[in-house]
Image 1 (cartoon, rainbow, N blue to C red):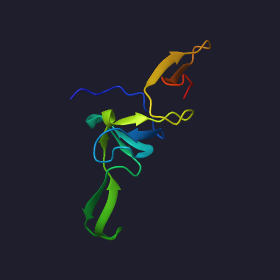
Image 2 (tube, rainbow, N blue to C red):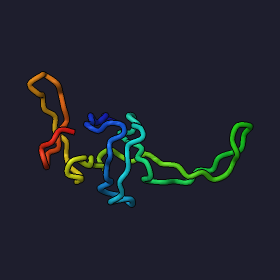
Image 3 (cartoon, rainbow, N blue to C red):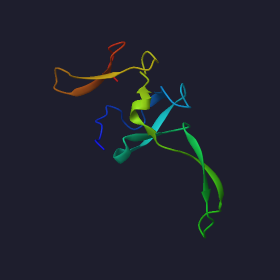
Image 4 (cartoon, helix red, strand yellow):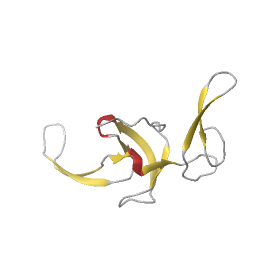
Amino acid sequence: MKRIRTKLKKNDKVKVISGKDKGREGTIISFVPKKNSVIVEGVRIVKKHVKASSTNKGGIVEKEAPIHISNVMLVCPHCNKPTRIGVKFLESGEKVRYCKKCGETI
């Protein structure tokens, strides 16, 4: 499987644009690069049966499962809308991300 280059980063606020959790928002907790997926806080909650051990109590635990990168979209902090991300260079030579809807840097 080919890895997708993404402009998303950890702690970005994203909105789910397809699937059973469509419309829900959360922040990116981590990336799963081999599956081209992200783990978003509060999205795609699954129940996992955990066996008891000396360190943890067993039972059924709810946790976030990975969701494919193509199913999430960054929410612009300025216009609060899901948007595509562009990359541009400033006069100082710094590389920044910007919102394609409002043009503000992210």
